[in-house]
Image 1 (cartoon, rainbow, N blue to C red):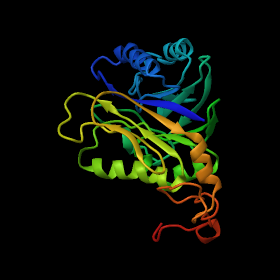
Image 2 (spheres, rainbow, N blue to C red; image 1 turned 60 degrees about the horizontal axis):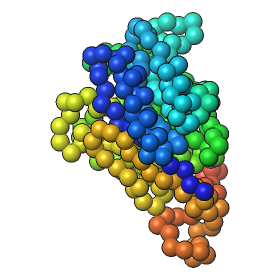
Image 3 (cartoon, rainbow, N blue to C red; image 1 turned 90 degrees about the vertical axis):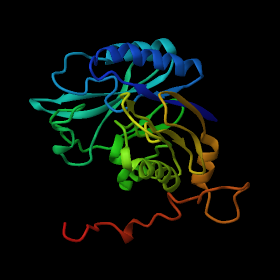
Image 4 (tube, rainbow, N blue to C red; image 1 turned 120 degrees about the vertical axis):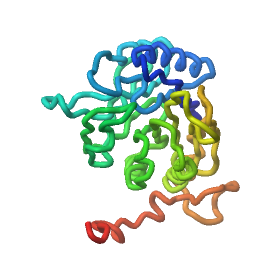
Length: 281
C-alpha cells in the first residue's frame, strides 16, 4: 500500500494576504491533478498570519478538499479563547468530505518572542501543550511546525504514537541554516522510521540556492526535493515502512535496506533517559 503526498512551496503575497486563499486552491488543484491524496500547505498559509484576523480561509479550503477528494493541511493563527492578545500557530487537517479531522497548535518553543514584531509575522504567540496524531484512511499522520524540526523529541513522540508520515510545513527563507534544516528533516525520518515532508512560503526576494526548501524523505532516501516555488509530489510506500518498523535490526530483513530497522522498539530504552534535564536548567 502506498499513498501519494504533495507539499506546496507557495508563492505568498504578503501585501494582499486574502489573495492567497484563491492561490492556495489553485495549488491544491495542481497537486490533485498529479494524483496527490494528502496535500500540505506551508506554515500559516493561506493565513491569516497576523492580526487582525480579518478573513477565514478554512471554509474555502474545506470546499476544495471535498471537491478534489483529498486530505488537506492548511495553516493560520487563531485566537486563544478569552485572550485576544494571544494566538496559536495552527495547522488544520481536513478530510475528503471537507470535515476537520483535527488541529495541531505549535508547542515549541514556549514563546512569546518567536513571532513578535516581524515584517511577516506579528502576533502574540501562545504555545500549546498537545502532540496529537490523526487517523486518515491511508495512514496515521503527525504534524509539526517549522523549527520544531530542531527538537527530536517531538517527532519521536509522534512516531511512538503511530504517526507514519510527519508533515513539518515551515515559514520562510532558511538563509544560513538551510543545510542544517535539510539535514534535520532527513534525520527525523531516519531515526523515527517515518516519512517526513516539509515546504515553505516563497516571498520572491530570496537569493541563492537556499531560496526554498521543499522535501519528502523516507527513512532510507530523499524521495523528492526542490528550492523553487510549486508542487512537490512523492509516493510513500507504507508497506515497506511498516516492515521496517516491525523488523529487528540485523541481517534478517528480506531485502537490502538503507536504514536501521526496529529503532522504535528494539532500540528504544526510555529508562536510560527518562527524567533527564540539561545541566543548568
